Length: 348
Image (cartoon, rainbow, N blue to C red):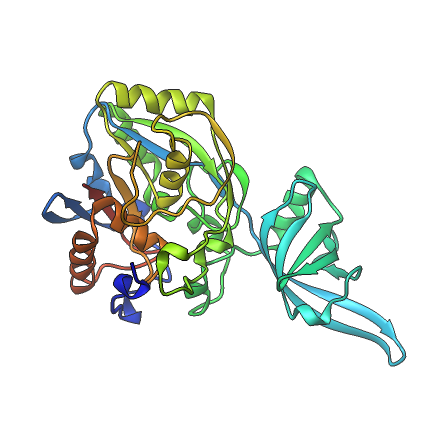
């Protein structure tokens, strides 16, 4: 299975740099069996049935992009360097792994000041990353980071424009709760309170799980044979209540529909033995064609990068030839791609 099998031509003009407003007005491509339908997200209820269950990830995106100053006293006097930091992953001891640019201008033990309230010391360097220990913890850290940080837009958006204040709302789901993610579950960005109410009124249930999506989700696949690719690990949790709700829906004949590849990867991690169970820990599950799905019956997701692991995931769900036809249609119909783009509902 070669990386080139998952390539396609994507015009740059189709890369969305701002979301649709209102959220549920984004376009929705529905691929059900051999049929493709063009709709909008607020029409999602036309394809749902009473007894279905949507699985939503409730991770809150951390404003993980910081710009600070490293000061140093030397023979030439006091010198300063601006250091750009992107937080990658929280560690159990409260420290963070991070990308620092330029990393070479910071020595281990030196302080980077981001605001009057927030600073960090570089504890260690490893594999092109730094480990940062911040001066604050808990709610104080969250408040200072919120004031000093910017939303960590995906690289393909950040390359086209800088993040701004609007992204603090746009790049967060309406149900975000548990801080720690540095990338949004982007299919969930299409939901607003009005759509959620309509879904509930028709007898479709929702279950929340947590997956702290890391910046590694944007890392390119660098091997020709995709089966040798190693996925990054991300922390997630399926609570006993969530597992019981999903299991009850399956037993009753309802469909389990994760909203986004993040939710799908998590519930399939919790069901590797064939049955959904409570689960907590790091998952590096890699889903590509040939994967056996134990829980997922359909998937709502955005349109993904060529040669990406997420494109491999949707190919695994509905078939390689089928997903190629879906993406050919999306490009010709000028659907908007990636995190701020339009959505698809894939029903095998």
